[in-house]
Image (cartoon, rainbow, N blue to C red; front, side, top):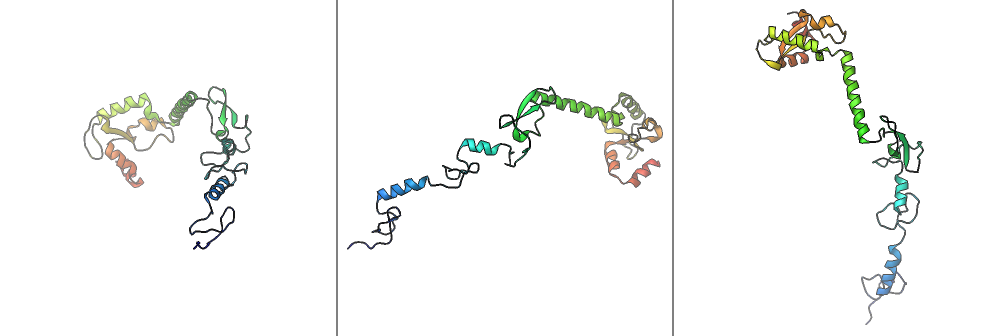
Length: 220
């Protein structure tokens, strides 16, 4: 007795004679799989064309490159108003040597140097300028005159005025009751009434203390 038909073939539409099958023959199954394997999936994000691979967003590497142009690592559009030279790069000039170089479009506002050597040279110059600016502000403790004076003062006052401990070398520091740096007053820097010898532990506690505690030290 022939098997009862449970449906029609997905390729040719003939009635199926057995349960659990979608095709009437192997030839129909191969033909249907071949036609639907290349069926259009999601369109290309750049041109809207056919995407050959499942899960891909672009039809070719060319479309991906055009879509990626002007985007950063997070695929966000940046520097849209800056024109490009060859469709991908932007003409830039090195801030150190002035040489013309090409930078990717998405790095047009960040690229400043033509090479790592120029980048290192700029970092070196910025470090020099920063140190000179700090010295101009009034960090006189780095000057040789203050180092000689503080060394002589520590030799004549070899103990902490707060806890009374005597230590050698770098464990004792000279503290200024009134900071001379804001006013750039050199008289306060070397005034004996403005100097207090402290160990590093007491010195750190003093800077963390309240203004009332600092005033008590000034009254001693």
